[in-house]
Length: 225
Image: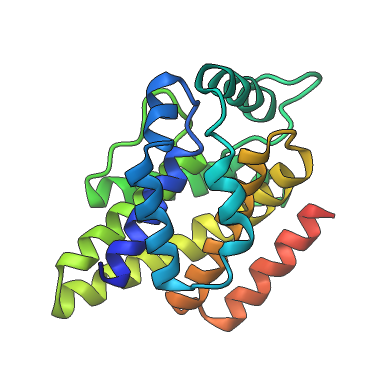
């Protein structure tokens, strides 16, 4: 497994972990071979930094299947879909960008432009800037990069860096922090921390310019506060 293939696999699994965990999704997440591949991919990229959350993440779903799947589904609904008086942690970017005073509609249009250019079709049942779609899109790009060479490889790396810096860094770390703060389920607590840690790795791996790093970190800190 090369690094681009590992990154693609990690993005795809983290994307799946942010889909409503019906029986089919739950079965896909908890498949033993998938978990082994996930661990191997994370260790290939960074053997130490992901381990703090990986152990609990691997064990959380493996209790009594029916009970745990229902518990995860209830917690997913509480966190991301239907809480009173408002959704606790909305899983789509426009909510956070609007709070920062940014033009969320323009940003959403730009996200769709990236999708269209790459031939990616977002899920019909989700908002286009849902964390699931954005992570899946990055996984597809990383997978294509693993098969490319020369100028095509460089182009795909640039697209990933631009998409990460413009549409993921401005809100996903804040979203993950809020999930970790509010989750009553170990699985989602660890998913959020793993996602945040991986996005931080990607920021460095893809070479997001330092001045952009600082601006996004300041924005996230302000929003979290």
